[in-house]
Length: 101
Length: 166
Image 1 (tube, each protein chain N blue to C red):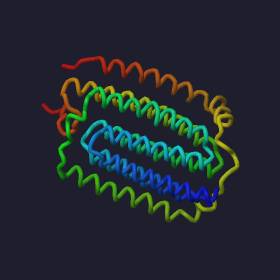
Image 2: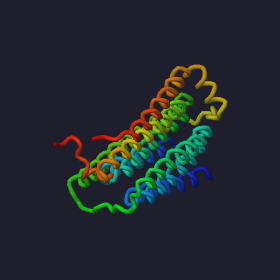
Image 3: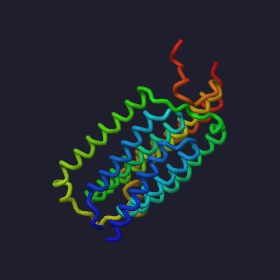
Image 4: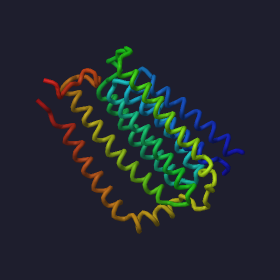
C-alpha cells in the first residue's frame, strides 16, 4: 500500500471538476443528474481516502450515508424529470422555463 | 508496485470514461460510461481497504441507481430527441468554472502535500464487521434517520411521477 494520499485527492479533484463541467455544459436534464452523481462519487473517494489515512472508520460511515442520500436524490430527481416530460414533452433545460410568465 | 499500477490504470479509465460521459451524444451512452466510472471508483475503494463500501458502490450505484436512470431514459424515449449543439455563454461559463475549480483543488493538494505525506495507512480495515460495529452503536440514530429519509423519498417519488400539473 504505497499509494500516496495526494494521488487520491488529485483524482477526485479531476472527477469533481468534470462533474461541475457536465452540470453547466450539457442541457439534457438526465445527463445533468448523472453529472451530480459523478460529483458525489468524487467526494466519496476523498472521504474514503481520508478515513483510511487517518485511521478512522467514521469517514466510511459518512460515505454510506452519502450513498443513501444519493439514491434518494436520484429517485426524486428522476420523478421530477418524468413529471416535467409529461407536461412539456422535453428534458432540455433551455426549453423549461416554469418560473417565467 | 502492483497497487500503483492498478491505481494508475483505474484512474486513467475513470477520467477517460467521465470525459466520454460528458461528450456522449445519447443519454444511454452517458449512462453506460458513468457505470464504468463507478466500477473504477469501486476498484479504488478496494485499494483503500474499504471492501464493504466497494461492494455497496457496485450494488447501489452501478446497480440500482444506474438501472433507474436507464429505465427512465427508456421510458421517455430520449434518443429520438437530439440535443442541439451550440456554443453559448453557459458552455463558456462551464469551462471557466471547470478550470478554476480544478486549479484550486490541485493547488490546495500540492501545497499541503508535505503535511499529508506524513499520514500512514492504518491497519484498520473497512470490512463489514468494522462498519457494522460503528453503524449500530455510535451512528445508530443517523442510520434510523436515513431509513426515514429513504421512505419519504420513495413516497415523494411515487406522488411526483403520478401527479399531473396544469
